[in-house]
Amino acid sequence: MIKLMSRTKTILVLMLALALCGCGTKANDNVAKTEEAEINIEYPKIVVIGEASYYGTDEKCEMVPRKAVDGTIESFVDAAIMPDVDGYANFGADQGKLEYMFVEDGRLIVHIGDDWYYFEKKAENTAVYNPWIDTDEQGVLEATGHSIKAPEGASDVNYSYCVDDKMAQVTYMEDSINWTYRIKGTSALEDISGMYYEWNVSEDGMVSGKNAVYMSYSDAKEDSEYIDDVYYAQVVNWYDDETGDTYSLSASGNNLNGMDIQVYAEQLFTK
Image 1 (tube, rainbow, N blue to C red):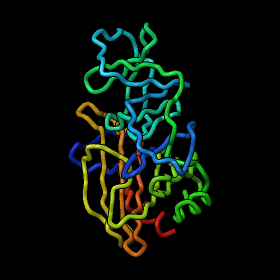
Image 2 (cartoon, rainbow, N blue to C red):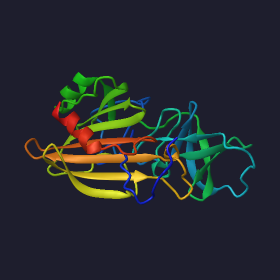
Image 3 (spheres, rainbow, N blue to C red):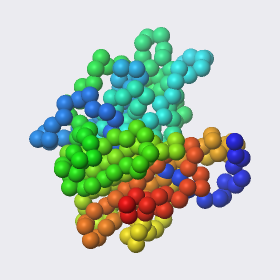
């Protein structure tokens, strides 16, 4: 493992999901898919464990059991999306992970900030609509007019598009990093990454001659002795004024230190 040499050294970082302007990073659809429906849904805090969804309450757990946690949630979708895959939540991305425990009354408690909150089990997901449609590369092109492609050699590739705003998306894994690549027609540069962090770094940049904004996040703390202990996130959004499209590339994981996502984005954009 590599020691963290300096807290002041700029850390280049990135993620899933993955959430956004219009639509959020999605989990797999287990809900009805429709393009005619008008979608305007607000969800409570939800975590999915096994095949059950647990809905958040405002009730704090004042007597936390003295035992090891039963698990952690480290995969997140946008707050506007209902998670429906084991190990996902629609909140907590800014914390990097969410610890949880089962308690005797069948409820769940989740560690949020400095406190533990009760979550109650729902028998099944109750959402009617999901704006994201799973498809393939050709399906995305036909639905949105955007050609988007994962790099060769990527794994866990998933193509989808957002019904609301015809946003094209492909998510994949490469070099143990979670990647999300998006395209959306806009009138100006927007942040369409769907990532909501308190960014450690935010600065203007360029991708293949196009105006871009780069942002990075790291949860490194004073006691983070090793790089492998640190969660990173990076995102770069850039705008093609010739086509009127905003592009977004985001990545997250524990091994992004030293990666230049703007160079990677340029390689994707020019292929």
